[in-house]
Image (cartoon, rainbow over all chains, first blue to last red; front, side, top):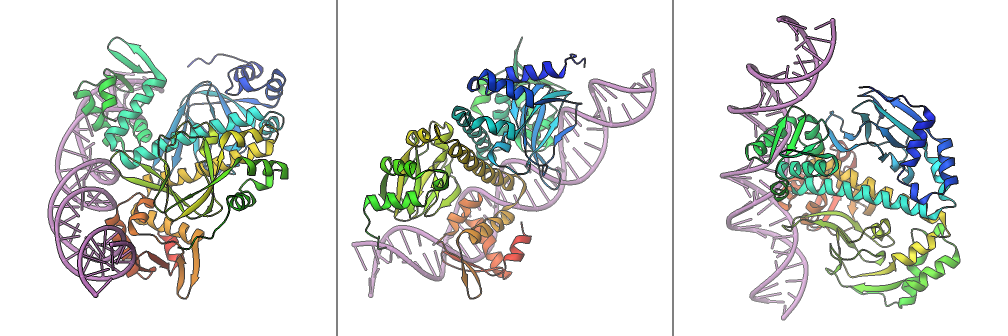
Length: 234
Length: 234
DNA sequence: CGAAATCTGTAAGCCCCCTTACGAACGGAT
DNA sequence: ATCCGTTCGTAAGGGGGCTTACAGATTTCG
């Protein structure tokens, strides 16, 4: 992949422009943020932080993709989210988290901007709207995790797969001749981690969906052909 | 049960004194809170709010017990927490939640104080420490849910039961001749809901633990005799 | 005190999905 | 073109826990 050559300053500028909190910060505050943040580049497959690392920074994605996941001791994995350009992660550091509980790994070559939580929290001293925005963000994360929990407890693999495919279509969908392509290379194993299952079971379930005409697939690519019937499976 | 006869004013006073946020609020702010809140009494088994109800209040428990739980469409249930006197719940209303996602039911006769979220959020305008405290609270909730998720995905029923018993001992434990009694009447069914399992499976697992001498039980009562061995099961 | 409701013990059957296993197809590298 | 690592298809076997079923025990309430 050809990376666009950009200076650190340009990246920081971009990250602040596209920051989640841009609408509750004054130009002065944005400028201060820009000064204290820094940009870092990772190659595909590197780890940004491990579970147990000190939790005192947050990240905004300039480009690339980052996977947030749980690991259990035996190496099994549950992927919580795959973040794309413009998104924010690591924000649990703002909520008093001491050590990381998840792992953050790059799926592609990635550049992101790092903000130290202290620099960010300092801004909340004089900006109550910012603090409220943070609580909203945490609330959204809470809802996401709650949904995962609900699915794992009450639904089977098929329903979880259907729901996850729908979310992927919503977030990364790209129109195609005979349906919507998920604009994100995903192996069956990655998909399995997203739904809390195994590669084999997921392959089987996907094959079944293809046989029923709900989707078409090639290695790493999934094209959803019938969103409605997929919704019925949830 | 004999309820202590107390005036609404006395209850509100108590709730504010024992409020989670008491240390970040000025006496004036506490006084303002006390003015805007009101106390309500429920009998055992009543519902405080249903999933789908508007989410615009938070609650502090004066006395009694309240169960927070998920329901799925077929009536299965996952209990997230059992709240006791002095504890706060419903705080997701502060994070922009529009409608309740959980159900809140009383397990005993209960009195609680209700605070409207607007009254509370107004205080954050001039009190950044309060806003930060809210984010910490949400962070704690997030961790709790994450732990549940992790357990459901990676652990079996036995490990989940052991972990939940340990939490109950920690929160409600009362010393006893031959161990620690969980100071909370819990049927096997309630316990099953706490660990995301069924009554039968839970009874079986409990019986096994009793056979191994880790605990003793009577109807509704559990006395843990060997905390250490219980920890090894997680 | 007696009847009804609730709670607990236990077991058989079954189902979903994980585990294990292996071969084939595909893609990238040299 | 060939080799090798990765991804995918598929199937048999097994296990954990849910479902169903029922009887006995305990509490509650009239």
